[in-house]
Image (cartoon, rainbow, N blue to C red; front, side, top):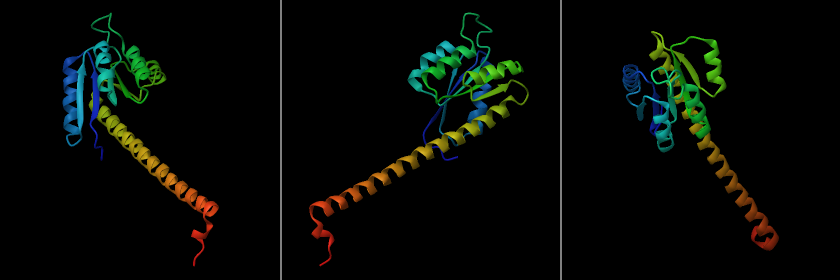
Length: 176
């Protein structure tokens, strides 16, 4: 992976032990990548920092309001994230293995859905790896797009000069 700019990842999880373990696993797996990870226990705190940091990836617990019933749940936070920045990739985490929750998550714009099981960290790492590859491909696409546009502009300017010379001073084009 050849990502040069820092990747900001938010982990929004009300279980502190799980959040810190996940953070350590990501940092260990992607040790050579420029990654900065922020942890949040509630969606509300995450949303305050979201505008300032503009993370590329958010790992979001579906049941954020399990400890505090007044807290926003994962879908509300997901909707807010997508409203603020459609390009942010969101991985939904949940202990519930229900198709309805997965479908609801994808309908609201989640990039992936991971059930908290004994293979949860491996699945999250695999998803992150794929998201990094997609981000790198998008970056390369933008770079090539600028290259093609620049080349097109250069050719257009050269053709424009030749037409102008032909109209205003055709003797410059005739060999002597």
